[in-house]
Amino acid sequence: MALDVGDKTIGVAISDALLLTAQSRPTIQRKDPKSDIEVLRRLAAENEVHQIVVGQPLHLSGKQSRQSRKIGVFAAALEKKLDIPVAFWDERLTSFAAEQHLEEMGLNWRQRRRHVDKIAAMIILQNYLDSRPGRTA
Image (cartoon, rainbow, N blue to C red; front, top):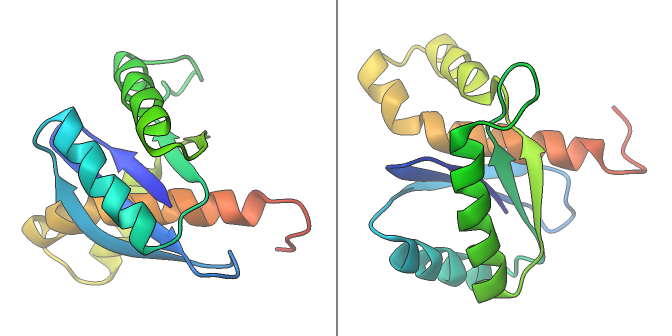
């Protein structure tokens, strides 16, 4: 499972059982960390998740941002509460790529805004899956 964690929403993607492809899931509207983690716990249990990949929003220079530190705190709490390993994945430019993908599909800006987080999570997860040893491009 991959997450694109923002202040207001969490984009979610789940892989298939063979760990080959990423599929987006409905975006979660954030309430508070405890409620958000509970929603993710249920989703992880329903989908037999064994690892969570969290997008890490770094500066273009590669340095951590204030947002990446906030997400790090959330990810640590998530890992502790769910007892599922969390890995970070560089998410630089994934939201931009998601926006472009949705624009190419012909969605207007309002429609793109509703879907960008889950598409970004899907891109994060697919990039992570494709990077695993033994995968061929």
